[in-house]
Amino acid sequence: VFMDWSDSVKPEISVIMSVYNDEKYIAKAIDSILTQSFSNFELIICDDYSTDRSSNIIEKYVKQDNRIVFFKNEKNLGLATSLNRCIERAKGKYIARMDSDDISLPNRFEVEYNYLEDNSDIVVVGCKCQCIDENDEIYKDFQIHSGSVSFYDAIKKVQIVHPTVMMRKEALLSVDGYTVNNLTLRAEDYDLWCKMTKKGYKIFNLDTILLLYREGLQGMKKRKYKFRIQEAKLKYMWMKNEKVPFSIYLYAVKPLIVGLIPSSLMKIYKGVR
Image (cartoon, rainbow, N blue to C red; front, side):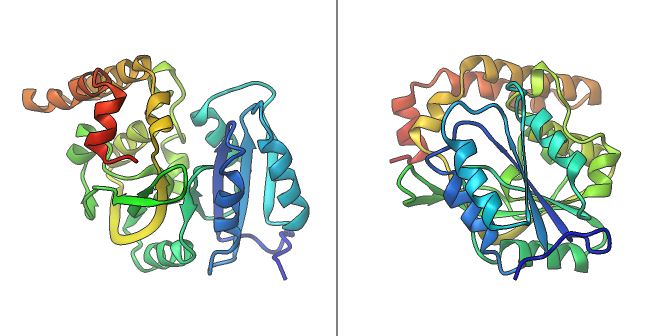
């Protein structure tokens, strides 16, 4: 028996997901949400003008579960805009992120929800995750520190895995959601954590694995060098505005250096199979 969202009943969590040409993995991603131990949620999916069968697959799920809210962009608008459009439709007090090719472990929402309920000073909670390849095989733990994420942590580099987070919607709206411009096309999460920590909001990473993060070789190849340049410019902008020590600027240069490494060597470095 699924929830029926009437005017008197609201979901506690709104899960937001943008989809673009992920027909190979979208069913697994949706299944991992619909089978969560915490069931009081809505799943808001935006198809960002996919050209494959993603939309057809999603529509089958819509007929099976009334917790799903589904809409399509009339043209490709990018991740930040698509997520903002999902947030506009969200009814829950918490916003949970999910990517269309990852897999949430069954207790993810329950653990993150309980943490935010028990820690009113925390605005964003993330968690650790494990990397999986195109065949769903786990090949390594994603290296990210647990504990608090300060403003200086956030401004140096992304310190929290975007699809693992659950956020307080009120705080997310107070920073105007995701920034949409040329510099945030592939770095919308970096910018969001900077905005939130700059405002004094607290972010915390749980020392618990709650998500399987897909990072295969094909995904690495998709990251064009122009996006590396945009990421570097965005980091430089934040660092310049905040007048950080000169040594911190090295983190702005890192995306440019990494982008020059051949994918074959990057595969070895990251342990991708």
